[in-house]
Image 1 (cartoon, rainbow, N blue to C red):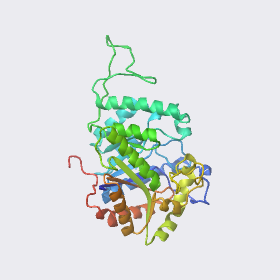
Image 2 (tube, rainbow, N blue to C red):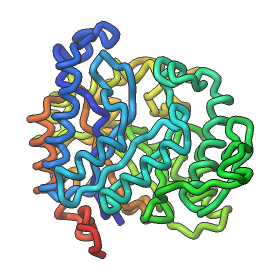
Image 3 (cartoon, one colour):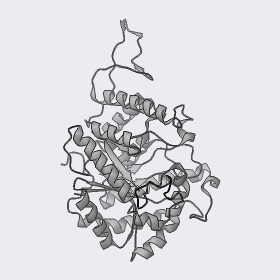
Image 4 (cartoon, rainbow, N blue to C red):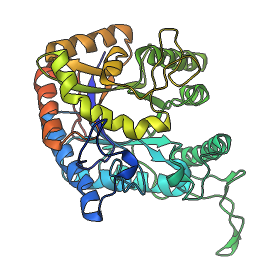
Length: 389
């Protein structure tokens, strides 16, 4: 049963001249004064979500984006700041790009954030996809196999740091601790100080491939599927469930997963599509070249593969694929009820702030959703004060 409603904000500023015929993504360049508007947006969004009873604000880690789409380089730091501006809202990292971190540094930072915010942080990990970002930090991403190998060892280190009081690690990329003398003895083990108080740490990861999906399902890492066509999402949810079951985890279909959607609420489907069209199109001007069109054709072939569409999607495609919802509040309730029936274990829905949509317009959309859609789900949970059950 759907219980929790969250929002994903990737860190965009107010973009000018948006839409399919607007300024090309690669021609956007903004001043530092304009780019830091992303932090004002984050504060406004967090406060509004907190007041309206949303569960979690998810944000994305990215670097060097003078184009203005994704302007938050440190999610843990941002989450701690926003926790001080709000009362109950949780803050999720979607996602810390682990190859750009030393695994102990991100583990320590999250542990401090967990303690300082009273457990209001949710740990999320990803492998990255921007060559400009990951390769600049000295990690591989163009070589997918090398990226995955590094990430898996980093995760091994992070899990030891979270869960074991005293430990060591010896791998291809890391030897922790180094075998050096320390205060008259040879160093053999290390303890991370501090460790998270909220243990076991809840960990989320986006689904990018079948190999990733099986890995996280077997280890109890939760999975986020966002802006993904209905048929493709069904494949990934079923595969996650099967892998979890094979690993001995007894969860219902859709359990330990979140589904993310783009949306616009208006008087009719047609009106909503026209309202959101320029923002939908602006998003895919930036993201489609990275392969973020997770749709399938009628034969189940992913877009971009031989025989399937390879063009930039329109909002009509997103609605047909059920990756985007457009319509009135009652229709949105019905849309979510269908998802509940299909995936009885699904508890988390994540709403996307479409790139290019002004804050005032998205704020109004969230208010409509909170007032007219959320109350229909009696089992929903807002973020609760620390100590509440």
